[in-house]
Amino acid sequence: MSGDLLKDREQCFLILREAFKKELFTLDPGRYKGGISDFVTAAVYGTLTYCYSIDTIVKSASGKDVSSMDEITSVIVRLGAWQILFSDKVPDYAAVSTSVDLARKYRKSSAGFVNAVLRKVSDLPSEKKDLSSYKPETRVSLPPEIFGVLKKSYGKDRAISIGEAFLKPSPLTIRFDKNKISSDSLKNKLERDGFSVSEGHLTDESLIIVPSDIPINKCQAYLDGDFIVQGESAILASRVADPKRGDLVLDCCSAPGGKATHMAQIASDDLRIIALDKSPDRAEKIKENAERLGLKSIETGCADSTTYDTDLRFDVVLADVPCSGLGLLGRKPDLRIKLDYERIQSLIPIQEAILNNISRLVKPGGTLVYSTCSINKAENEERVNDFLSKHDDFYADDIRPYLPSKLIMDEKREEDAKGGMITLLPDTDLCDGFFIARLKRR
Image 1: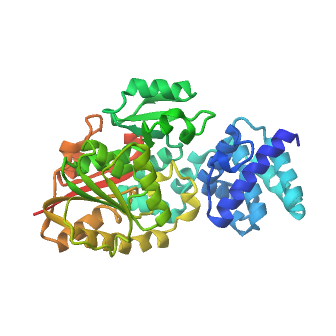
Image 2: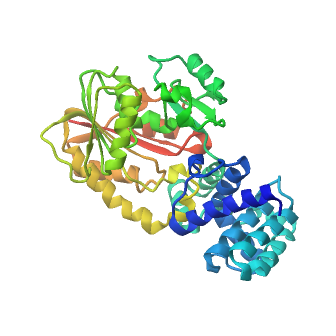
Image 3: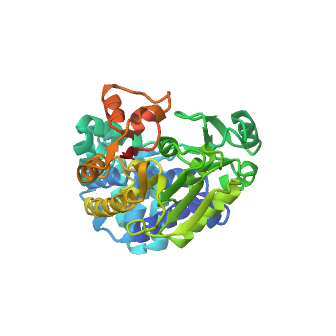
């Protein structure tokens, strides 16, 4: 194995091993001496994204269950199989030989086994390497219990469409304050640092960027406080909250501060925002972002939103609650190996507790915005409808006036938005999956 090939494959293996073993995943170049190559990024994301499909095809080809292999062998097999099945830049023989070399270094006794399994995957006829010939959950590389959540929420055909959209990596999106810097000026600054830049799909205060050799948090525009990294769907939550000058605002589960800083900018930094997070480290991140963006109206605090209490009553309360993250599968491929039905269900009581607790803090006539980065209706519409059935002092408020004109609206979405709720989906909206509900206190 050549030095460069060994370096790349070994780096992939070490990152993936950490992801599978410790549920810790990051591709932050700062953690790795010499940075991360494009191949490593593609291979790591690809192996995590297609893990379920890989396991299914490997078992079909070899009769071997990847999940029953030891943790080193399973990572090597999955990485090698991804190269064979999904990479058009790696010849099959190279994928097999480099995987065997990795096994010889990290689990010598399994080198022959790795060779045999991957050769059987390589020898499969083309139709057996084509995901469209498999069951829907394999086509979209989601375990049956997770695909079942999408199927229950949207029906089989739409679940497949959503799942296929999640197979594509989500773009990196940033939000900027149009009153501080123009789109053209920000584009020019980013392009000088080597970034490719295009307009956002939904909003005129967002840009989609392709990373350069400079880390996003080291470029001049970031250091100057010109933008914050935030998905387009999350940007809409603050627009739906619609804070005004002079308002008192509570932002629960706020870190890293995307929504708090956006609400401050919407109201020209002329309001008071209390931004809370349960983690002291994450609460500190809100403060750092507010200071970098030059915002004075945000006060940070460390508090659990299921029990937080205060004598204050707020014009706007925004709760972006802990959730399964099902809307982020295109951005966080490691969720595919972490999520299961039990974990998703365990979040629902927390969502209920937060909603019930913070609703007390909304003043009469005030606004309560509930949002998640999930597209599971049990975490979204069902939670809101259950809340409204038990709190007749709240009602769902028409959300349509706050939505961007670029958003595609069919009859069903019009009806949902009129009823105070909107779900963003990756196959139609070209963004992360996201749910927003706007409620008003009578």
